[in-house]
Image (cartoon, rainbow, N blue to C red; front, side, top):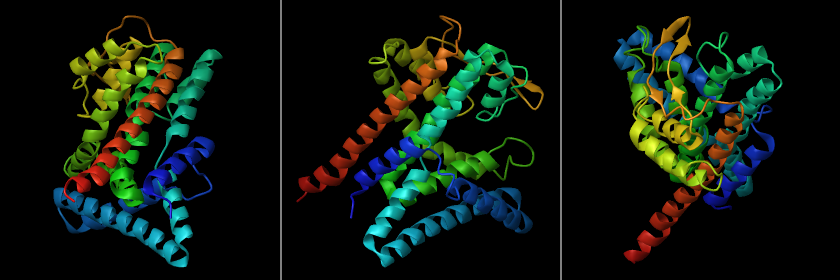
Amino acid sequence: MIELEYQILIAILLDQLFGDPRWLPHPVRIIGAACTWCERITRALLPPLAAGISSVILVLALTGATTWGMIAGATLLHPWLGTAASIVILYTTIATRDLVRHSTEVYVALQNGNLPEARKRVGMIVGRDTANLDQAGVTRAAVESVAESMVDGVTAPLFFALLGGPVGAMLYKAVNTMDSMFGYKNAQYRKFGWAAARLDDLANFIPARLTSLMIPAASFPLRLDPKRSLLTLLRDRFAHASPNSGHTEAAVAGALGVQLGGPNSYFGTVLEKPTIGDPTRPLEPQDILRANRLMLLASALTLLVCLALRWHIIILLPALFS
């Protein structure tokens, strides 16, 4: 058997080599189908708030049981097959390579002077309207996407993998998927999506803050601005609708020396949002690549810190009482 830490490292390597495994039924799509099914069943039986809470419990139960059952079944056939199943499941929860690939495609389109293509590409990774964005708007959208997604696409799955193995990582993906499907603040989902949104906030609380602290540290070897990154993090971390996303966004904005946030259009309606960071210089396409490098190094540092914490808790703490 391979220790969990090494399984996670192998999963990260697989993600770097192959990206999103299109040859596998992606767990997020399966979880999404489960969310739709649970919503339909619970809404028919319960009032919105209770239905939403019930859906969260059902989706988590189905996700946890299915993940555990797949690994247990594979292990019964052969222990190494169980280890392989565990690694593959961990691999599917990490999205580092795809995050870099999608954002880099936006950069390439901008560098080629193809603004319509850049708008199309960035529209694949953000929820705002992109049809009328200028170059700076496209760049801002891509940088913000990288800054936010480094938590839910990279560091949070790794954090929960170290806490609870493949089951923990997959349960986190279920929470994140439910928030993306139910966590709207409109009339349809305000009550139904309350539980999913609050659980997602709770799940990302530690990973977002830990990752944001690693961004100033990663800024130093990348020759960015670690001091401004830390100061902007402390000042602007709550200038965001999400209690978690603003942390990494503020740290990235400070490191790059640019301003993020501000007005965005959603379904034709402009929504004014607070700005994050200072406009010490205008945004440029190269900021997308800088954000990617920052995301990769900050994620690696976050993983190292989590591994160190796990080692101290699991190995050293029992030794103190032995």
